[in-house]
Length: 192
Figure: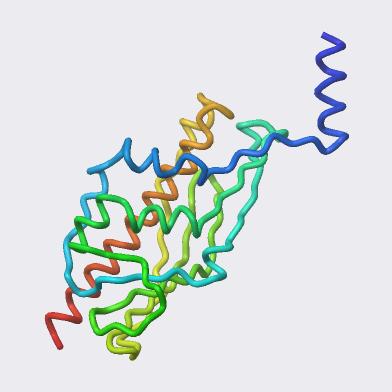
C-alpha cells in the first residue's frame, strides 16, 4: 500500500501525465452514432471552410473524476471538420464539401470558433458562422450551445469513459448549432 501511494505521489510531483487526444477516434465515434443527429435539411449551402484559428484550436483539461494524471486534449477544429464530413451532415445539406478557397456562387459556410470549454461535465461551444454567396457575406451569427452533461458516465466510467463523454457532449453541442444554422439558412432562402 505504501508503495502504491508513493508511486501515485511521484507521478503527481514529477508532472507526468497521460495524454488523451479526443479527436483521434472521433470519426469512428461518428460512424457508431450515425443517424442520431436528426438534422433538418437545407440546400442553401454546398461548401464550407474552417478558419485557421479554429483548425488549430487545442483545448486541454483535467477532471477529478477521471484522475488528475489524465490530460484530455480536444482538437475542436478536427472534430468540427469530421462532423461536417459525416453522413448525417452530408444528408442534411444534400452535399457539403470543404472549400478550396475559390469563389463560388453556391453558398459557403465559414466556421470560426469563438470559444470551447469542457466544464461542469459538458461541452460549451460558441461558434461564429458566416454564410457567403457570390463572394458577399449574406449573414454572420454567433451560435452558442451546450452539450448534454456526462457526469454519470464520467463518475461510473472514470478515465475509461471520459473520451466518449467528451466526444458525445461535443457532438451534441455541434448538432444543436447546426440545427439553429439550418433553420436560419432556410428562413433566409425562403425570404429572399
